[in-house]
Amino acid sequence: MEAAARAPATLIGSVQRALRLLEATSRAPGGAAAKQLARSAGIPIGTTYHLLRTLTFEGYVRRLGDGSYVVGDEIAKLLDQGRLQALLQRSRPALTALRDTVDAAAYLALYERGEVVVKDIQDSPRAPRIDLWVGFREAAHATALGRCVLAFLPPAELRGYLARHPLIELTPRTVTTRAGLERALEAVRAERLAVEDEEYLPGTACLAAPVLVGGLVGAVAVSFRRGRLVETGAMVPHLRGAADRIARSWAR
Image (cartoon, rainbow, N blue to C red; front, top):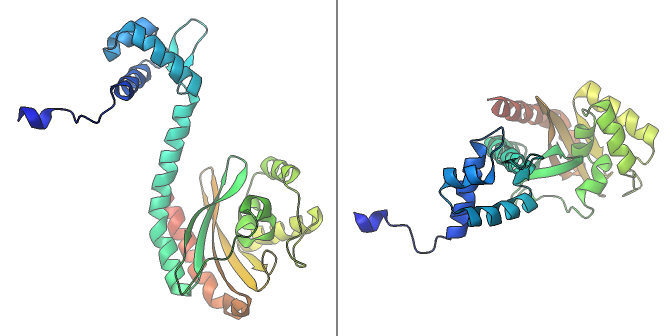
């Protein structure tokens, strides 16, 4: 019994002490002095100062003007990423089902810290993903997935995004003017559907539908050979159904 309760030999004591110090800091939302944190965490004061300096430098703890310490911004970022991972896990069954139903690779993207970011791709040997030959962050304007996200951004956020991202030409069909893109985004808002026809990659087409929950702006899409655009009418209900299921799973 005593052996079973003993900590594994591979545990790193300094990491354990840092975690206990973070826990102690989180229990004092108004801030706590180093000596108070040392007592709460059961750590020698000298060690506490060393750990606090490191944690402050890394952004996990913040030192206030009065010398007390509070939890830093990096902790909030970790929590946000944890919540995002949970949302992605909830969305994956709908994304996989969409791939299998329409026999096409399925994608999920989110607007995250000023960028349109592909967060998940579900493909298979029968339904391979497209070759992302240009980084998606530079090519959102040329894709149905990217335009579906951009269309539903707040106006100020959209203006900022477009100011930071030139509309580069990827194929002869790529929209490269601000006026042309704005017309395309207005059509996406009206239809709640984006259609891409060889604008990112010759021979490839894509459909996308928005996923909007609270402050999250995302989209789900499928990509396929351009010749399958004649199947759009059959694909769209499944695409929209997947977007609705993902939105409901995120709202739980």
